Length: 560
Image (cartoon, rainbow, N blue to C red):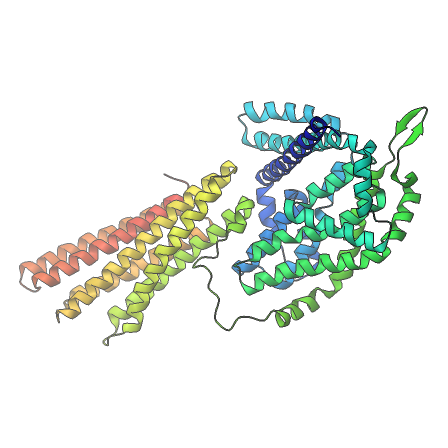
């Protein structure tokens, strides 16, 4: 083989693989943008029913065209506490079935259509102003790139069929014995672990077998290994995650490895049966009417890939409850409480914006709950005749936590919105960024009121009876106002803005009324200058809390 031929083959293979992987990414992102709401509903429908969970895993993987993304997302959801270990095992099992759809796409003998599909959909993507059409075009572009990438790889491997050096080298990895099968399985697992895409390695295997470069039996052994190798992505995603998330990743590895172990001894019989069923002639090209014709090897591999995963899932599905009980015993909880992040947001969600934006919304809701707790602590501190240092520390601590949560939300959403996301996700992300900032500001003003209260106590001063009554009444009104707005945030109720403005105007009216009454007391020498200053600052802080809560209501309504 000359250097020029080697360079051309390598160029076709590397270029084709890159185009294929980019096509898979575009297909996934385009499909997620088109079916984002359906994706959220599918994930929300996961229950402890193993069949439902398996069905969700299959459906989600078919939508996003990647079992790796599905399993990584599941690890993230388990890490965040939104999915139990039992639910995650069911979804992971379903993902194994859903990923086989890619093999059937590859099995279609229409690789030559890849470039036309890519070109036509590319024009729609570039020039269409309709967002849904653009993302549907992006999905079709991805499909065209998958076909075109496979065509490039096919052209690259064709010379290998007649190359004696390659044939001699590859006999070392031929699945003509059980030891040969094991070596092929290990090679398939290693390649997939490197590429981190079983769809890509299965596609390459199908191209090699379809062109007669490798025997059919070797291809099936490689596919078994590639099913095992895909677990590396979930394992890497579990690093640094909670113990329960690690268990989900280990369950994925266990299912795939055990599946490979039962398939290896049966593989020679399956190869013989499939060769006979599809009439493969051992996978070698045949002469038809004087022309070379390739047998339906790719269709046979796709059939094996699907059947293997369905049987494996059927074997494990009855044992999902057992696995959910056994895994915590094998990998017990750590002695110390695990708090890897202040938020449950996870970079694992960045590959699925439709789910990620939903989880960031949950963090905004938690910020709202945090400010409500701060208001409750503040009320107890202000009404208690005794000093309660514990609750005072809780207020200060929660304000620091909300500062950090806001930073984590901003960082997460900035990374999420930097990718290719739909207009809906972009709009929701901007609204959430605004709300996170508003809630952080509310926590600052709550702490400011507490500091004013402590300032009076340190000076051995107290508000007048009338002033104390007015401040507590205003506190209750503002707290109720916050609850009303927070409920709208949780339920995404945009119509709250009219009611929020009306109630906000009432709070503003009470602030002015209390200030006028205070000025009257000050004029009658019923209040000291320091008490007067603290009282006025408290009024202003409560009014600012009201302003930020109204801003949140306007954000929920989509107003700028």
